[in-house]
Image (cartoon, rainbow, N blue to C red; front, side, top):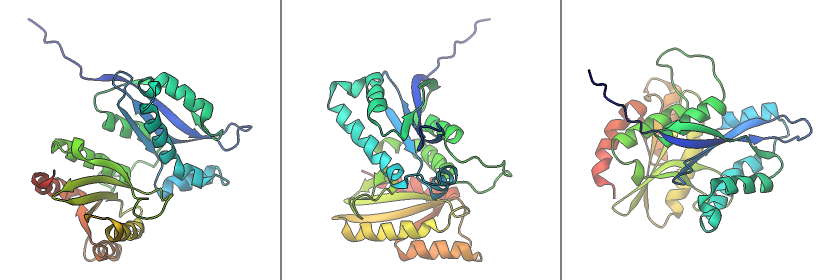
Amino acid sequence: MTETATISTDRICVYVILRYTPNLIRNEWVNIGVLLFDPATGERRLRLIEDQEEFARVRRLHPTADESLLRGLRDDLEDRFRDARQTAEGGDWQKLLKKWEDTLANALQLAPRNGVYAEDLDVELERLYTDHVAPQRAASRVGAAGSRAFVRNYCIQVWKLANLWGRLEKAVPVREFTFPGDPMRIDYGYRRNGTRGFVQTLSVSRAPADCKLLAYTAARMAARAPFATEFAAVTDVPLVAGNERHVFVRETLRDAGIEPVPMEGFAVWVAKLRPMLQ
């Protein structure tokens, strides 16, 4: 009997946990992000804390935390990536990380590097972020409403099954449409027939008030962008007419021209969008 060999498509990748250590003497830190990269290809993924509950957790552990520094960290690191691509360090992650360790603010530190097998960098990044950074929660019942991370992870799978993942913009900064220094990012962006579309995940069950920030941002973007825009919000639960909280979220989004899309209907929504994307 001949055994069929299983061919692994996993890549050997490296991940680094980013730590915030406001008091070096006490050496007490909190994990605030994950950098995952493939040393062979240079492909990378970066995720940092961005939700209000994540910043609240940092403040609970470090009441004097410099939140402005933390909110600006993503842009700082992206600038460093951009600069590195223009130098010999662009493809040498060991040198780049060593340089970061020497030049990052004292309150920001990189944990020791670790290896990991990963077939899909986006899926692996979500797993690492959940394990090392995301606030821990008590086990919930099956079918309980999810966090934005849960919704994002589902959206990633839908985008990929539709073969659209490589055609999207990810973590789109909104500062060019709002104000310099605005740390907010829209989860996904796309282009179709001269229109730019933006899709944001929203946890109605855990942070319904976030819809007001999204509505304000969408209105600013629509008013200032030199092109046509359209917006959608993927919600963790369907918005039920008899639920006051759901009505508040639905009307806030619709008043700002944002289409609410329940997570359970997102695959159908993407299927309708797919033929129109450039």
